[in-house]
Length: 413
Image 1 (cartoon, rainbow, N blue to C red):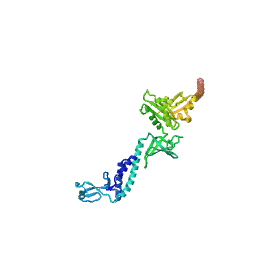
Image 2 (image 1 turned 30 degrees about the horizontal axis):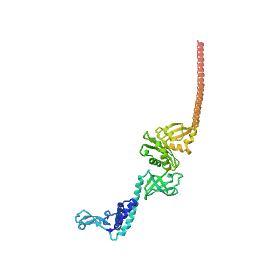
Image 3 (image 1 turned 180 degrees about the horizontal axis):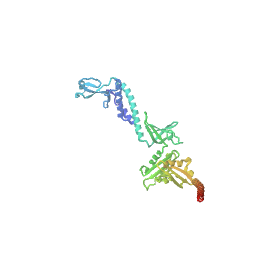
Image 4 (image 1 turned 120 degrees about the vertical axis):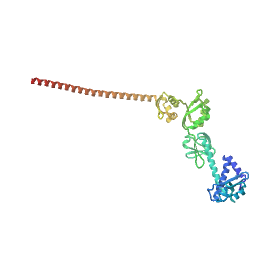
């Protein structure tokens, strides 16, 4: 047996407190390392009856081989004679198994080197698994971290036991991420790698808005108010469709809060990003009108209402067109993403022009159709006249023929 004292156990307990890796994992790693070192020492890596045993009370560790008790030994590595086994345990019988200590002399240094490598590897594996399990459970939630540094295309955020990556596409446009600042991020994905898991975080994802509202609005957390849909262009504007499951609770008012305190907190968290809270409705016309707020709407015509094709035609006052469309089409674009309806917006004058143009086209088609009909009538009249004239000529010819026959008969008589 190798004397190790109590230092190992003290170090394991300290490591457990600091890293969160249990003492049992470290001790098991040490035993596996010692067994592996012994197999390498005897040049038999496939040996299955070798194990290391740690005696915590005595503070000793040793290598043992399990052997079967037989009358005649054929394989010294796996079998032991009954007489030799009796010296170890008087009660042993044939076919029993006994553990024989095989720890080589001066094996401490070799064991220590192998143990260091194996324990280091096991610690890394344990850390990786702990981080993976922890952040897998946090996937889809908000966490707080500290900005470590910036690279050309990403921001590195320390989130406790590991550093997370915030790619450029998940950053708020125009936001300056200063190292050392605390930041709240959304855990977007966790990828397992050969080293520590790679955690991807975001500040641009739409779900971060949902998480913030769930934190600030108790009615949402309790299920009284429900967020039906979110459309976001990070750093600029977000539209949020909400619905109340309790008729006595105003869904929009609950999200805004007394004197706007709730919405102001969320807007501050999102760096003054504009947030439109609209009331959800199962009626598509009403829902589209709400989604296009703050613009006033004159009418909404449903052009198509199918599962794969939803289109609506919206008319607004002339002075509301730019507001309904928004800067660079942002308002109507967000309304489309919020409602999942394709929205075509026209002003009153534009709609009137379209209607007049359509009426002109219809009138033109009617005139063309009438002209075509008149031309057809003339052709029919000509054909009829020709037929009448031809019939008349045939009748005259027949009369002349009859008269000639009568004259000929009179002459013959």
